[in-house]
Length: 130
Image (cartoon, rainbow, N blue to C red; front, side, top):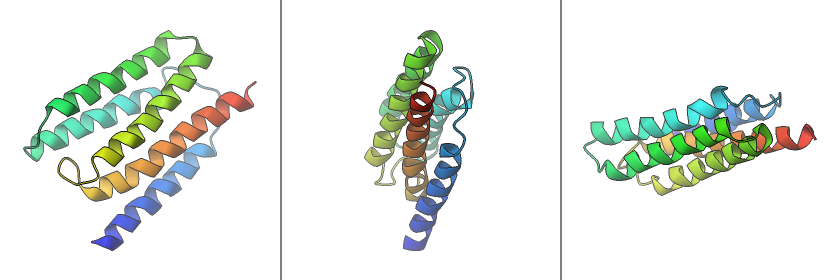
């Protein structure tokens, strides 16, 4: 079981590094914006399938959906930083779910480093565009 966990971390880091190497201009309606609430929706679906409590997951979908909406409505530079904060916040969300009751532990192990790399890539792209 530990090997699976390490594999999840390695996969998350590798995919995260790929996002960090793609520092193109921010597109508010792009995948970085919409993947965030979709991943939160994945937690809700997993909670339903595992018969876990769903209230917190509904709140997560609303929260991360609001972050995506803000990224669309705000000035693109501000929206990019808000979205980066949302991805970093999702890493904290992953950490809060590391017990495996809502999503499998390998999912958390993959998602947490990936989320941090996406957040870092958004900030790095914003800084490099100045």
